[in-house]
Image (cartoon, rainbow, N blue to C red; front, side, top):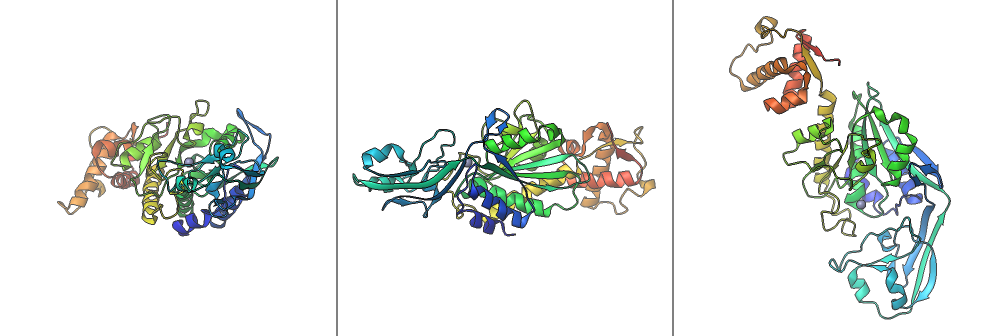
Length: 410
Ligand code: ZN
């Protein structure tokens, strides 16, 4: 699976928080990784919310000005149908532009207030005469369903790592599709993991709330999680801490990234639903440039050309490094804690002195032995020793095989 090809393929679909564009998106994701699809009927109560009516759109235009077929961003999401002839003056309250970015079309929605509207570039608006104009939106807002998809990679443990992507944005590439593509690539790469990995592809806010409402009794299985979005812009990888602030997933990214982490805030993506106080799940947020912080955000400038294949690769590799640390992070107990055990007698001291990698392996063993009193994980030891996590994990493995440490069990 080529991540950028998937972004390009999904880009033209008119996604929303419900409807056939969302379903088609999940169907295409399902060509790459098996998805379990859940359809929740309109009117279902989910936590403090209610599943809205389902929105579908076939066509729309302001004749001679903008056409839905050119870009689905031209129509305000959840617009009710309209068929009218209107002057520019009458039409004007329904038109949305970005005066400071006159070439770009904004992305607007109105999920919970019944209205309609068109989005266009400021340049297009400036070129409009007084009219009248034929205005048409062929949409339906009717009882139906909210749809979400899940992919689970079973691990040896029933404890879960949650990866959550929103799939409700129409033709926006970085904010939405790049995260989806990286999640699909990660899911394909996971083979026989320790943890069980649950990927959720759901509309933002209402989709995460719906999933939480339906899985309330089993959320305690989620030990680590993140929302994944804005995964392909040219900016550097950014991690926003979970509500806990110091969860293991937060510690992993603090260790991996050479730039400061963002502190938790109850905004952004669905980390604020997973991290609402009743659930309080350790779910951070992985992006490149965070939501709202790049000029193309929520505009027609966020197109597949804005998303760089090498940036998505970099996000994937960073995420993969995090997964490897989560998978390997264990806490050990030194079984010979009185004085240093004699490593040479057990063949654990390298026979060739002086080689730097041998030195590192020896230092890793000494650090693991010294710190393994049941309170320090390998990641704690990596932070304290400045040794690479992998070297410590290998040392712990060798020490365990020699009977000098065992995994700490509470
Ligand atoms: Zn967004």
